[in-house]
Image (cartoon, rainbow, N blue to C red; front, side, top):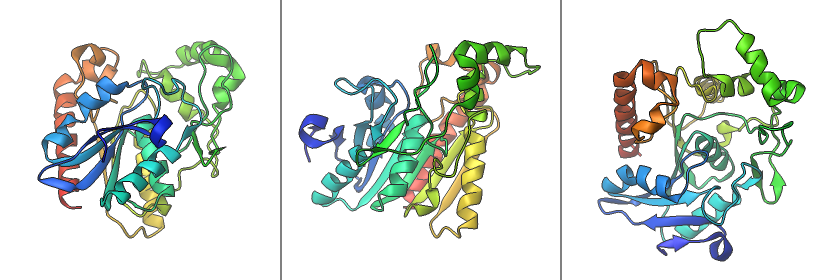
Length: 290
């Protein structure tokens, strides 16, 4: 394995860290929206310190990659998995946070060699690229083999625009402030075509979410996926955890400045820190059982 892979030369962009005590277990590790190499490398240290082999992969926003959530290829992960197998690694898992968690689930549903999924604050549908100024683009977040994956549309935003939707949201009688982004997904037109077919995975899966996720309805998504997998008699291990007092910053080691943007962090700072600590331990436990 090389220390660094690039899209231009290898078809995917990633940093490779071979493990020590658990080196046969490889985790393709991804962050969420707007996270550059620095943040990804820092927040993935916990797995490397435990001796796991980690391929820290960029799916967008890294230097030299697109800075838009549009048509991101599942092919990145497919090529990374092929490279790992060619180098003798057969126990391959995938980790993602937020948009990276949705991407991880989609990749696992399409790539059968992925045998474990750690999905933190996920969503279970592929959606269109949002746009602050003007209407959404209609372009899917993700693509596979050169074709956009079917996507759900932000119906409410399409009808009223971003600022029209914001004005409408502010008229609502709600105690939950700063959850405007989540309302985009709650008012989207979800279709079966755009649903991530988690029942097609060949992987053990850990699904984690905060009950009051102000970014998108991840707890609703976790409950939906749990039911889908149960109804399908899914033969692999499934663990779902929804923390009553936690924020969208699960799975990270956030600086204090990040916490200011999340209502739960202000309201329940101790509980949020405890939830993050427990989330890491749940990941380790799931990995030990793999």
